[in-house]
Amino acid sequence: MAPLMGFSEFYHHKFFVNQHVLIPRPETEHMIDMLVNEFKGKVQRVLDVGTGSGVIVLSLVNAGVGKTGVGVDISPEALRVAKINCNRLRLNHKISLIKSDRLTKVEGSFDLIVSNPPYIKASSHKNLVHVSVDKHEPHQALYLPDDYYVLWFEDFFQEVRAHLNGTFMMEGHELELEEQAKMLGRLGFKDVVVLNDLTGKKRYVRARFNA
Image 1 (cartoon, rainbow, N blue to C red):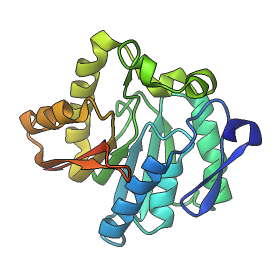
Image 2 (cartoon, one colour):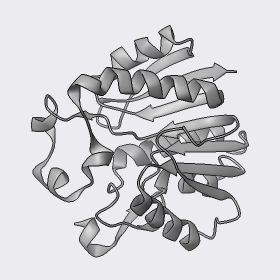
Image 3 (cartoon, one colour):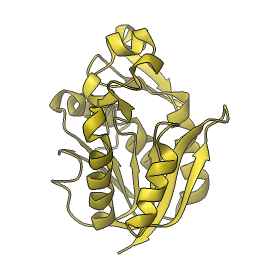
């Protein structure tokens, strides 16, 4: 497994990973690809919420999406991994890494906000999770309590709205994305759409908000 090897291939680069971060998935790589195709050279500031190993914000800025980027994570161990990857890609002058619970320590507005948040319900989705993922990857980055799930995302989307002047894109759970899209609409986001991954499963929600 990637955590034992200490690296993972992702979007043309080799990233350091360990037990404190999620292993980058092809679904996340596809999200990067879509964003690069649309926004390369067109946005200034990028925010990655729940950055983990930093693969999203580092890949986007390295590919020319955003002149600068900010990655936030609640886990100091994950941020240490992201810092190592930032050094490996020589992006220290373009990337800031902040310890923050969602966007509580974030300042300013962003043209693009991207996230791969914890989106698995700890009880009702648990049987859909592969045993090796549950055993080897950080539960804080995977799971949310069932009874807090809807409120967590409502709070998160409100925080995103307060810092967004452009596009928001999030990876999510195929069983939850349609309801989350409706929630974004109720919160005033525009052009809300659920998108499929390469296997045809619902995997992303995307929306716009101009403050």
